[in-house]
Length: 364
Image (cartoon, rainbow, N blue to C red; front, side):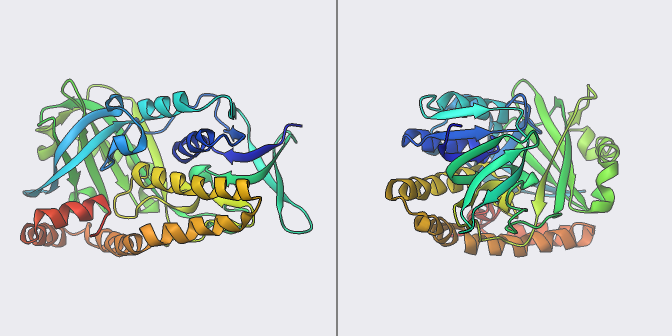
């Protein structure tokens, strides 16, 4: 049996970025995923404030550049001027996969990890799959997303977290190509909508909710949203292909390490609470984690892994706590047109820079 320095469970956003960084440092890494095709992903696009060059990505991953986000509620709206992008998620993943150093990173697909094993000293020694195959390493990393395959087993993630769930269509678009929309108000019945423009007069329109009672009827709700007068002016559905996905809604977590097990990404709720997108934040967290994993391997000491938590807290914890407070306020107010309109009115009184930083999940 081949023993690796690092075994990563999950080859999504976090796992691919982490594997890329570990490969750069010549760490022998095994990347495991239960999918048969790594490009089989939920949601094809993502709105983000990411600076793609900071993460070694090219302009090819940008589906559209966004200069303005319109917060819209019935007959009231506010423009927030931003420097953002709509990402083509498949192209992001393609670039990350192509960037892996095959001399140091192995990938195995269709592997369903279901156990992690410890010795008498509480050190994790292996993970195993449903077929009984075992994978040994010095350090293990859970990048399995909302499944939290390892994080839930060791108590770093809630076993059944509330999920924010969304569905979306690719539609004809009649609006401006550099304007995205966030749709709020009573007509969304406690949910929220978004419109992300693409190239060639296309856009993604989606509907999401944090209310578990609404999850089963999301597609029907999105179809109702498409019939709203303000929406019909902007988009037209011309196909029945629906995409879907989810993110966990938990308290802000800041414990990601137990012994030689490290967790990155949705497995420990590292999506920013107010933004709801993880690429910018999870990429940064994965790169951060890689530095201390490499240091631990080189020094043959897992004590450095706790520095990942400390560094993450200094960089993100205050912002995430503020974003969580804002998230709760938004949840409670979006069912009322009065409060949504009041919120938009208050946005108009704030400087654009403050509104943009709040939307981005960064506070300065």
